Length: 145
Image 1 (cartoon, helix red, strand yellow):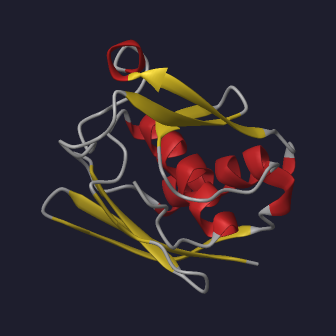
Image 2 (tube, rainbow, N blue to C red):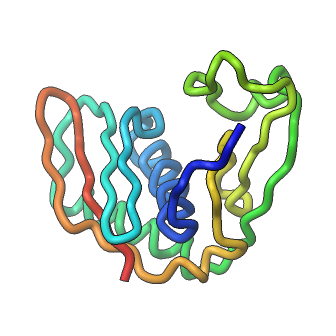
């Protein structure tokens, strides 16, 4: 399996954003994402439209994790074992028996093949630049400063 061609800073920020959304809204990780060096977007299914204060709280929470300087580590775990603590629904059918789990300190764990920074402090500032909500889908567009 080859690594995705993602910017390590932006891709690690996406992991933090996903876990923040799970914690704040009780939703799943993004079901669609486009991750680029300059700006990125993630889509989430949530039942109610978030307020401006909710969006600001998400941005603040992501920045708090980034500024905390947690280590980003990886481990290789059997799929069956990993299924107890990470969502494997996006795992391709041909994924190997041992899968790579990326940990953002104790904040997040996710099966992933992409590149990441080694410490969240390397990411820089996270900014939600726009958002919209339609038919139960929240799209967040963000950049790093």
